[in-house]
Length: 247
Image (tube, rainbow, N blue to C red; front, top):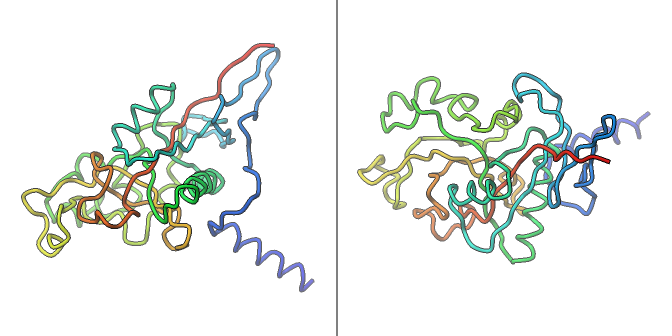
């Protein structure tokens, strides 16, 4: 009995951390679902994940994800264009398994390129009423609520889990200063809105690894933290429905 309790405790710990191992992904690009004489599966380079269909994810059952890595920093607009070029949308995760896949894929690329820390663009935008420099609005609902201040653009991901994965101090103020010293007196005249979402990839820091942070959509690299690669976007996540084939 004692051994059983130890096993369950270890299982809980493992499912809550992002220790990258060599285990296979929970689903593969060959994941498929058959109906009569047709089948659906994820296209090449995409990994299929089953989701529980509900109103919040537009009744999505199988969703295909691809973590796309870049050797050069990219803006959110460039990430969107790249996803659309292959028939996808900028996407995000709906659960722990999908989040773990993204972290694992990014970590593999970072290790290969000797990148210690970095980020990936995900789907999401700060809601219009919270894209403001008005401190009163920033400290009031819904702008001070982690579950309401951002929205997902693509309707096929239930954001319930996503909004629990913000870094503990994120998302904070909507504005982003261009110089580190401006943090004392911001917003300044040249501050911008931190209106998009990036996922931090920091394999050596479990407190940050896989967590969400907000950044201005046009920034491939955060100018006030130019020497901190954690804020540099080296990739993005594309998502799409499976493809239909006949046999």
